[in-house]
Amino acid sequence: MKILVIGSGGREHALVWRLRQSPEVEKIWCAPGNGGTTAVDEISAEDDAACASVNVGDVDSLVALAERLKPDLTVVGPEGPLVAGIRDKFECRKLRLVGPSRRDARLEGSKIFAKEFMSRYRIPTPTLYGTFESAGEAIRALDAVDWPVVVKADGLCAGKGVLVAETREEAAAFIRCLLEKHALGQGGSRILLETALKGEELSFIVLTDGRSCLPMAPTRDHKRVFDGDLGPNTGGMGAYTVDGMIPPEIASIIMDKIVRPTIAGLSEEGLPYKGFLYFGLMLTADGPQVLEYNCRLGDPETQPLMMRMNFDLAVALDAVASRKLAGFKTAWKPGASACVVMTSAGYPGPFETGEKIEGLSEANALPDVTVFQAGTRREGDSIVTSGGRVLGVTAMGGDLEQAVCNAYAAVDKIHFAGAHYRKDIGAKGIARSRAAGELPRG
Image (cartoon, rainbow, N blue to C red; front, side, top):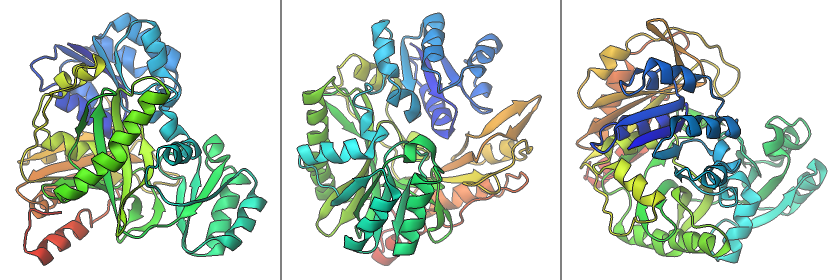
């Protein structure tokens, strides 16, 4: 197969890294790619130049690129092109693509649409207080909520459109920021208020062809920018996956009460969902509840998943595109994997770019370590920063503690001006494992 991967982040670098290990893959392109994907030997200088010029937000340009390259399969990493309807345009041209239709991608593109969908199919989710386009109406509605309360932007906001507000003042300030100051653009032009749940968050991702479903290993993300889950939300500061993260009975509830009803509902209302579907869950005392849907792989959850994956991803994706996923089996390397995200100074606020990155070769040379690049670009023989989230330093280990230790050992080898990262990725999981006396558990 010849495969085109669309995107420029750490998720896409990890996908390229895993796909190139398949004996079924002859060639890989990544558009627009980053400093890491341009290093893979499948991408020629000519193709790389063509890919680098593509704007991932320009669906027509991506379609034109695919018509020129003629890949056997296209895999979309970020949500933007999916919400803009890239699958619909590809299928009109008989181009095979793994990803949902524009209609189905509304599960991520509109939190309000997702809440209405879950209500129709009785999928457990936090209680909705209301949806609002006026700051004044939303702030008045705060008089009738229980605290804390969750304020969510309706549209795409790169992981920064949610606030769990402890006080009325905090909630009102965020509402004004979205609806009056338009800090998150069109994505924040409508908001919703919902109850805040107590429990542990879990990222549960499946691969589906609309009929059959393959669950990925569960993962946990770290959204806040600072240690101790402090500071503003980000796109993700790190993630991990480990054997035994959730009991089998919880996994069965998630599949029976959430995953299968979601996929069945999508098929009933539109085209069969083909691709990755991400369930952002809260594991509460009353059972798992859906906080959000994503219509693609999570980032940085993808990085540790690709490290532990022990099946041919290219064959699985081809089966999804052909709607022949039934009977396919997943397998995962035993132990754990963890990803520590290194960011530019100031992220998720304003940040500088163009800083030279040192130590990548030394970090990648460590056992069980792979450094996935995200906000990077090549300048001659150097790799420099080009975004907020710069690197996803990812490592395997026999248990979670060893995986985290290996990841931080690699982080210590890497240097660029203003580099920031959390120092507590996986700490809660390790503490639980120590308390239980079972280090492999998360």
